[in-house]
Length: 375
Image (tube, rainbow, N blue to C red):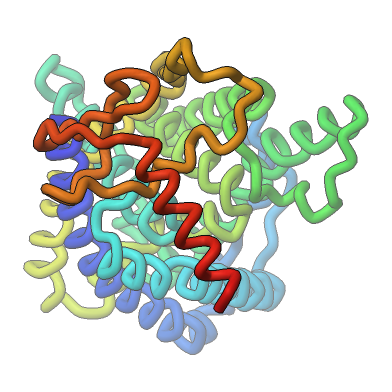
């Protein structure tokens, strides 16, 4: 049953990966389109981005406006493109190469994890949203869709990169790095930006703390309903940060926040985007089950099977040499290679029951060796 569920999950994941490549390509096209597009609106009084700390309620420190905000946007664009190329190089090609050679393997892959975690986060967000409606609570939204497209692009790209710095770096990467350094483990300095970590005790503690901060940081602008979905998204982003590094978490955050940009450029994409989004949500339900099982097994590992010791026949002394020389023997009747001792000098083929005399076999082996030496 487990293998069937895993095979189903891998097929669903493969289709989601195809849709993700198409979606990601449109998002990157929109990002390229936004650079000259935003330059036309630098003089607008709303052309500004906030710099804040999440503790966990966002505390605004200052705003960057106008020309400086545009330069900041160019810098963010460069980071997003760098992260995208990193994901493509480390994830997309290796994933499809691995899938077509070993389609149902359990090997981790950056691109596959980004695709699955995006789908899972989307599914969980919509699940909480509709459950809130079911219980009579109307979830509020940030309302950014009411603003012009250039403003949406400016704020969403800023959030995708900047929030990874103030949450994942400050509350996950930095404290984890300092903890290991204090314990005497000399990590390279680049590990402060994540990557190469496994889910140990300290990793899980800081992952939960950073995800809680990320969840509650969304409450002031979205309302209480957003805390749980943002917390789950924080777990996904934090996992990518730990396993692959900050560029991986930026990619997922960038896709999640910038995904509506292509729709602002062309309304013709509304129908295909709706179909793809529905598939992502359905796939997210499958991944939610899969990840839940994996998390359960992580905290409740199955006991390792003890190796079965094969008892030596009592007439074989531990000091005897070459007692296993017959293991390359083949039954002359059926060709079988699995035998059972009958007595000190006889083996029984377990395939056909033929009895083989060991003394004659050893003599034949020695004769073959002598002939080999003479040659």
